[in-house]
Image 1: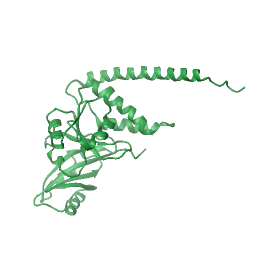
Image 2: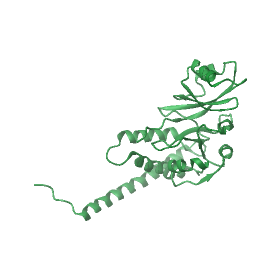
Image 3: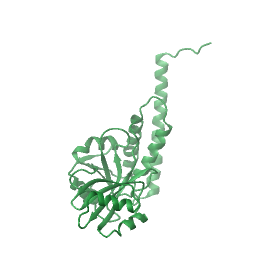
Length: 261
């Protein structure tokens, strides 16, 4: 015999049961996150963009059904930032005006945002007045030249948006740029006297980098290269030996965003 058809009230009761189960699991997740914060202590960085990217990739890889991937990712990002990171430390995001919507979409509604100039964002993140800064990648202004050149200085650590959408922004923070499994790295290459675009790219490729120039500001060039490039990368050492390159600085990078979903 065919199964009896559920009534509308029965279907709604089933949805209510699922909602309660989801809510219970969310509360359990919060308690586990609190344990993570205690284990990390006060000095360890709480925001791990590479780990977030790997988590989102795993979710998308196992995702089935009719829910759009962007909706799934948005739910998890709200949990990661508002429901996890904000429980472990006070979080604030400084944003240039043109990146406002991208930042709100990426970091969610659970953290405070403020509008600032690019130069002010770099200073505030470096000085601890903002946890995260969101700025346009490349373009005019050369804000990337203002990233202090020390091991504890802000680094570019994420690209926005991570899934679909239009725009091209990056996030900076005083955390390490870590490998996520699929990454791109960013370098600032300074030359004296100024080299042309073709000569800079040729030097990078000679050192073993697959590189693209994103922006130029005076004698400095912002360059993107495939893969994760750590400070101990032998190719960096080789590049720093090129006579006409006065400085080569690794300023971070990002987990490669997912293709549009």
